[in-house]
Image (cartoon, rainbow over all chains, first blue to last red; front, side, top):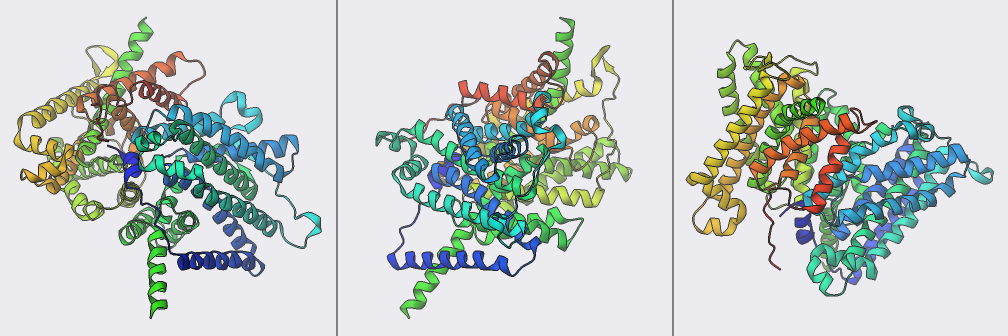
Length: 338
Length: 292
């Protein structure tokens, strides 16, 4: 009938991978992790900053991936959760002098509650209707942050400036580098959590709901509970990304969290491959670097160049980076056989 | 009471814009089962073409007809070239395609006609309609055109062979193919018609919001909301939805304190969502029965 319902039925099932391929995957992950750990020691601060943003957007895309790829619910409202996370951290740090690291679990909890509560009425909606509801949330959020009676806390249109934390224990590294490693640790922890979540009983319940709601409920899955839970978890993770983003950018303002952000995150998910968690970071790279590249190719036509590049990607690999990964895996498998 | 009537009238006048757009949205949804995010940009581009034709000295109605024809062909071309290859791709990939199309059209229009705001003529004049200060003749004309369009579509879908074939292709593609309907071309036809209806909407809206590449952003959101409220399966519902959204929005802005212009949209959307929670298929939509 509609967009997300088709997702529910058509979302590519996670393929069973042979044991050897698993080790290939693990090997690649470890290699990527090593690169992520070592590279910042040799590059400029600006590149480190961009890598931090890559991790943060990757985390936000990952959160959407759990919601859409995992439980089959479509959301255009991720920017709202991101904004709530960012503002929670900013307000706690600036008005209550809370340590930045402590604000992160707080935003996770606040956003989880927010997402869980939002998921309740959203239960009645699916497909385009859910898309519209989440879209409404995304358009409302910047306006809500500008409201007069919140202005005392949010700083209204002007936003809030956030102080960047120094490296602790007198470690000899710049603020950017420290923040990078801090984000990397948080992202890694959440990544491992998410992978395990999707492999757990709850994760299987999400996927059962995605593939067939009626069948899932007849097997005893509490559909309402797991659907709202998926919203909560996704919002919580997005909130953490928002917090890290606020600390990294050192600034929060209502107009940084418009629907454009939600659309970018959505594009990131599609480019990375729906339902494939490592793809989230590939998608994040796409939404951070490709617009810049497009601007570099042609200033006046940057939007058109971006659109053409996006078309090129979805023509070549309609299933996103995941498709490339699967092709790579098969290639390696064939090479090994020879 | 007078304030109330006036606000309702003003709401109906803006609602006509949304109704027009919603009609285009429903058309394409019928044909391809997706919401086309680039619909507003396509309409904007058509409107710019008509503006350009008028700049070259072609009279309004001639430009109108030429633009409709070009938009129809353009819509079919977009489907054939860009979206037919994606027919088998996942739904979310298609949505990404719409976003890409949005970016391409918006940016090209900006490059060709730049981002300055342009006046756009109206064929109906802009004097007060029947002595009312709230509805101008243009807005009355717009309501008239929307209603005519709706009637035309109704007859097309109910009483012509092609209309019947399009309905069949949209609701049960496989069976439609078995009785010899070329479903692939029906989809292209749906794109063409949606594009032409969008062009009409754009040309009617442009005198009100002025012509510029971003003119459709806000309108499309309301158009979607109207279409979803009325039920995506019903063109009649889309038009009613359009008027309702216009009236909602105006009344919320007038009667709820502290709302003002900025919160109008979120409140209208929140209201629509509350309606949907009670009636998930929209006010006039067909309840879809799913096979288990």
